[in-house]
Image (cartoon, rainbow, N blue to C red; front, side):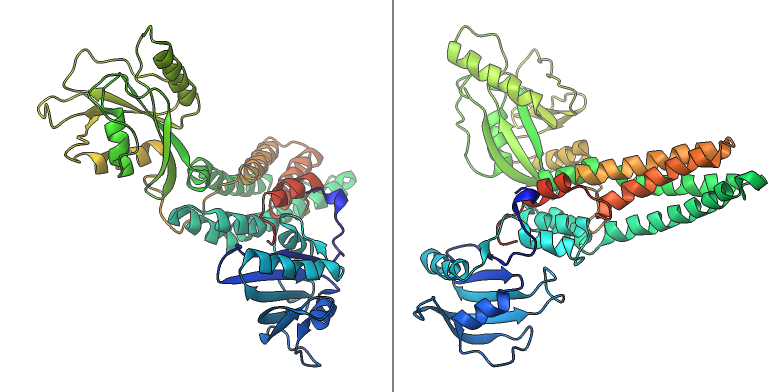
Length: 445
């Protein structure tokens, strides 16, 4: 969606629910929403009571009944978008909903772009930018922990912290401006070291939150965990055991896995793509060699490598590395329970032993093992960049104050910190940021 192609004053309409369910929702927003409702929904009272459900029939432009359902009118600005909004609760059949939406379009509404309803909510001051992002996170959450993180964002936790720190920065900025205004009178800066400490403390708060980004990103987006090892080391058996189903082929023949096999699991609230790979060895077999090449490609994208060693065999191979964290797993521990590998997690896919310990180790290696539920974490790169920028500017301001730098120079750093936090919550936002954000939303939201 490009901002140049849309008019925020248009009346828009879209199907706002999954098609095919028992109930389907059509949402209309804009100045013509009420008139469209009055033309096509019957019966209606002369005076609409906002936020009150009305039962009736939705009719097309010829007066032919299309569907029976409920309608509710929400007058702006007390609505989701801040404009007049109508929501129709009809039957969820794909054809029925499509015909009902067509009535709205024929009546003068425009088909909504992805995320356009939420974009209007932001532009009309119904929510800040972080809450708008939280809505997309809430819809896309794949685990309870990701859902918790989205709820914290939707509650305004990040917005409140950013605005609190921004207000404290503005107070520092005001004290600097006083000194700049009276520079000719050589008025000394009031307690420069005190201002430096305040700037330092604020930077620390922002940095502490920014440090949660790696964990938060994994909770929101998930992680790729790649199983590696020699042929017949037990990778596929371990893959199936962690998955809880026989997804990968397992035989006693070395080199059975010729391609990467991926499945999604959840590890301590983190969505994980688990990747089984071809065994690493030198081989003249062209097909197996291609599988090994794909293993190496999978390793390049891994957030964590789990290297599997068969403790019943020797010698042990050297774990591959791409800079990502690694775990060593001693597989087939039921065959040689007395043999131990230093630093390895003993696992038996057959007996089911060690799997819980391996899940714990995966969570710890990804940095999410101690991540408590309900806490505020940063899961968006945009949030992280804004916090790091603001913190860096505050550090620079603190150093300038401590070294008696001219207040005009310090004021530039303070202004940069203010600007970064303003951009975080959407007080100062450029159009392409909005375009990228709302284009990722579903239509109807």
